[in-house]
Each structure stands twice: as structure tokens, then as C-alpha cells.
Image 1 (cartoon, one colour):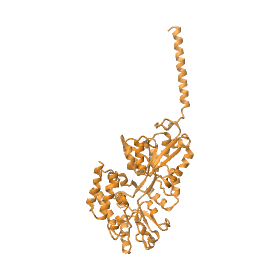
Image 2 (cartoon, one colour):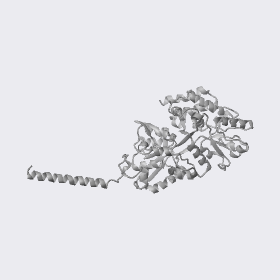
Image 3 (cartoon, rainbow, N blue to C red):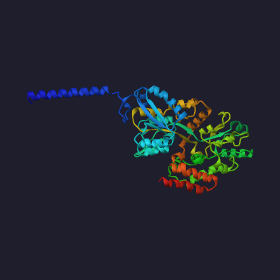
Image 4 (spheres, rainbow, N blue to C red):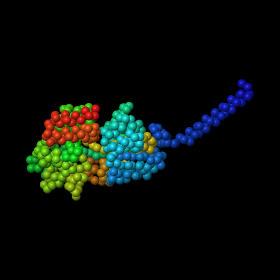
Amino acid sequence: MTKKYRSSFLAILLLIGILVTSCAGAADDNAGETPPAGDGDAAAGQGTFLERAMNKEFAGTAVKMFGPFTDEDAVKFDAAIKPFEEQTGIDIQYEGSKEFEATIAIRVNGGNAPDIADFPQPGLLANFVKDGKVLDAGTFLDMDKLKQNYNQSWLDMAMMDGPNGDIMAGVWHRVNAKSLVWYPKKEFEEAGYKIPQTWDELIALSNQIVEDGGTPWCIGIESGAATGWPATDWLEEIMLRTTSLENYDKWTTGELPFTDESVKNAVKKMSEIWLNNDYVYGGRKAIVTTFFGDSPKPMFDNPPGCYMHKQGNFITSFFPPGLAAGEDYSFFYLPPIDEQFGKPVLVAGDLMAAFNDRPEVRAVMEFFTTGESVSGWVASGGAISPHKDLPLDAYTNEVDRGIAEIILNADSARFDGSDLMPGAVGAGTFWKGMTDYISGTVDLDEAMTEIQAGWTTVK
């Protein structure tokens, strides 16, 4: 090699060395920067996305949320997340709508999805999951931590079928329980009645009340176009207590038909109370014509027109004014039926799902897996947390605290079945078929066939 070419070669090597050194320095300078959207590597900062957010790594960013919370609920939600916003510098921009179900579909399908949406109906979310439009929360959340902080049933209910298999469609935030039986506390105790621990004891208590000249139950299912929905709640409760969770899940997806013996057996068990004229205030015929919100009011007559009413925790807003929880009324857990299925609880709640993938979105989603995310709402009343890290003493009233305890101690939990079913069934033939059966216009087999027919319109 001549001196001329040797000099050129050495110059090229020197230039390469300078470029390599420069790139290495640039890499070091950028080592702490946030990864681009969609990058699942949390190693750019220290700790989880939530921990990084608490270190203000994502300060100045915004997360857009959309959900059904309006009016007072929206105010309570905003107040609950404010400490997080102040600590992290992330602006959670929440927008609520009473037309959430219709609007979210328009936004998602129109390419204008919010970063996070709050779904009170998992069945609606499942449609977006199936289309591959929802972020798999399981790709960035620590499953061991989730298992420590949630009953396994909540995690099971968050798993949904995506284009490439099951994904964790979201995380549970605020919830409520339906497996509650309300009673007039003072009169109940003065009569010497004891809270039943089993279904047999519940029936025995009902018989005792009849023998004492009273009426055990107040039941009403009239609700305008939605007449019949309280009956579906009762059937769902009994399904959870008389068959497996696997069967319950298959039932809500149409794999287990209403004509199956396990479903009919549950209706028969329900009928022990509903179709007994001695058990129900006004008799069987009154159930269909009594507005569900008015149905518990006879409990507070003097003497009580009835002593028990099964409904979710929202029903207290329909009680006569001036009544005090723990004094004028209380509640107990609807007892189990078959011990092999333990003590399940029927629930409703809010499932937070993400549509856009950025570090600050992941941080907010992780925040929603903590009791701290709902603690402010719990303190103000009207919210129950499914998180194990929120202590019971965080609840400021006896009703919410007692409901939280039932949810946390449940052997299993499942979402309202009719809300999981397609509208043609869950809010259609299921409501109508149960109403027809209770009114006596059709028998059991006819009612179940009528309800099952709704599935033919969605398959």
C-alpha cells in the first residue's frame, strides 16, 4: 500500500472512531428519556409506570378519559383523582355523558377513541376487544401484584377474547354488590328474627314470619320498558349458588341455553319465594305491577308490610326520607344454597379500559388498580372498592363498609348476567320472559323457550 493510500485509509479510520464516540455519548445523554408511545419497556426510568409517574417523569402530559359519570358522580370522581394529578403532574381530562354507550361506539369506530374509557357494561367493552381496539393491560401490569390486590374473580372477569386470544381488557375501579337483603332493623330484631346463614334458614325464617301473621318479602319488577330486570337479578343470584362459575359464564355467552336443566332448576328455587302468595306482599300478581323503587317501602309501615327485600345498594335512595342506616334499616348477605359453590356475590362496577398506548396512560391504568384511586370517593360515600389494599375503616358509613366487607370476603364474584348478554336477550327476551312467567301467562318451559329465542337474533 502506497503512502498516499495509507494516509487516506488512516483518515477514514479516524473519522469512524469519532462517529462511534459521538453516537455513544448521545446514547448516554438519552438514557433517561421516556420511550415512544407503544414501547412496553419500563426500563427507561426506575420502577413501574406508576412509580415513574410519582417521580414526575410524565409531568405535563394529559390523559383523556370518557365515561358515564355525570353530575354528582363526576364531581366525586374528579375529587378522587385530584391528589394523583397533583403528585404526578398528569392531567386526567375526564368527560362524562349520559349517552356513553352510544357515544363511545361512535368515537372508537370513528378513530377518535379516548385514552381511557370507563365501561359499566363489560359486554359493550367486549365488542371493542374482539375488534382489536383495546390495549392489553396484562402486557404492562404486574400480575402478581394484581393477584394480591384483587379477588381472582375480578381478574377473570377482566379477561376477554381478542383477535389473537384472551387479553386483560381493563382493570376494575368502583364496584357495587347486588347480593343484599334489606330489612327494618328495629322491628326485625324486636320480633326475634335471626339473620339466616343458609337458604334453608332463609325459607325457615319466611315460614316463621308467615306463622306470626306477617309477610316475609316485598318484590316489584315494574320499570316501564325495562320491566322484569329485578327478576333477572334474582335468577343470576341463584344460578351462582346452584351451579358452577363455568356454567354461569357459558350461560351469559349463550353456550348454556336457558332451556338447560341447571337454569330451570334455578328458576324453580326462585319460585319457592316468588310464587308463594303467602310470602309476597300483595301476592304473586302484585309483583309485575309494583314499581321496583316503591316495592321496599312497605317494610317501613307500622307494623311492617314485609320484612325483607333483595336489591343492590342503590335501593336505599328509594327508601322513605329520614331513615338512618344501622338504626331504621340494615342488610344481610343473600345466603348460599349449595355449599360446594361457596359464597358468591353478584356485582356491577366500572372497568377501566385503555385505547391508546403511552407511558402516562399506562401509569393512570396502574393507578386504577390501587385502593388509593377510589379512596376519596369511598370517604364521600357512594363508592365501594374491590381493592384489598383499601382498609375497611376508610368507609365512613355502616352500609358502604358492610357491603365492602361482603365483596372482599366473597369466595367468587360475577358480573350481572343480563348486562353481559347481547341486548336482544339481556334487555329483551330475558326481561319479558321472566315477566311472563311471574305473571302466570306462560309456564316454566314456555318462558325459558321464549327467552332462549332471543339468542337466534344475535348468532
